[in-house]
Length: 152
Image (cartoon, rainbow, N blue to C red; front, side):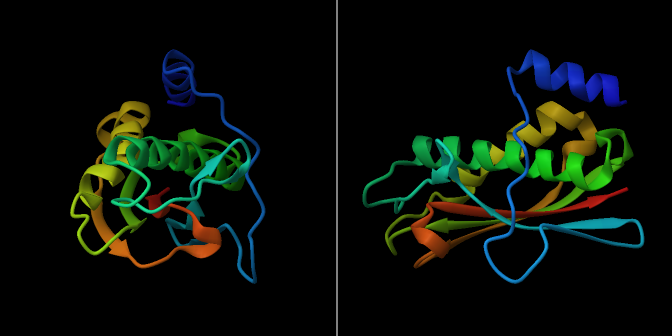
């Protein structure tokens, strides 16, 4: 399975970055039983927080690109935490927070950027339950934050 995931990542032109450290008093990943819980990852662009507010200075397509970038970071954290992506049986749940105006209502479309990449990388095992919320602010002014739960 690892070869398939590696091949899929390569075919998609995805190079996994080194996972980033936590920004406060928490760990990036914790395992309990056969579940791995990944802390929220904020969108980054050029190594810095991808700052913006959907509906004000960012559109849905840009937000979707930010969510896709987060998916890459989430996968990198999973790989680092587990040692190998072939330990992932399935992606169980994704929760997305979108820094958005009260008038913006496409949070679900923004988080598709993450969900679609997880499906492309993990196939049917990448299909997951999901929530998408609009919020008034995200740490460091980031436009999107996403957390993930995986079964191993």
